Amino acid sequence: MSLAQRDDAYHTYADYLAWPETVRYELIDGVAYLMAPAPVLDHQHIAGEVYYQLRRSLAGKPCRPFIAPVDVRLPKHDEADEYIDTVVQPDVLVVCDPAKLDRRGVRGAPDFVVEVLSPATAGHDQVRKRRLYERAGVREYWLVHPTDRLVIVYRLAGDEYGKPDIQELSGETPVGVLPGAAIAWDEVVSGLWPQEL
Image (cartoon, rainbow, N blue to C red; front, side, top):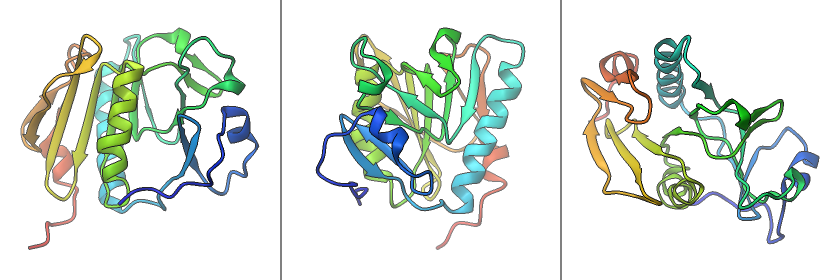
């Protein structure tokens, strides 16, 4: 399933800031995509637990974790904010360069992004956003599948993501771009609803 587009017009961050806060959109290359309604509790639990574990492991270090909603502006060149045509809100992200942070959120590629998949966003996150994060230079991108209990890990090799590493949500998965950080999946899975047969 693909997310609905707001309209057929080309939009920038200036347009985005003028829209009512009651409806949330992401901009990708000027196209405004309506964000999915509030996710199910498993989605929120996974995002919260991953954020919590990252926050614990990064305490006292320069890298900072964030949880949605946080605007991540991804300029293609050096354009001013109002001309940026790509603004996304990853579920969980980590930024290690404080120069990328400002009062509005993040300007530039995070070092690490986690998206928790739902039926409404799976295709968007696995195709459109994977290409976007690769192009922007996100060094590590994880897709967590709550239903299948899998994580797909993409790591940037040069300017492309290499072959993904697919793992079950068990044991620990180290975050390659954040030395000393790992996600303990047993803590995450223990709070999920039982799998349907």
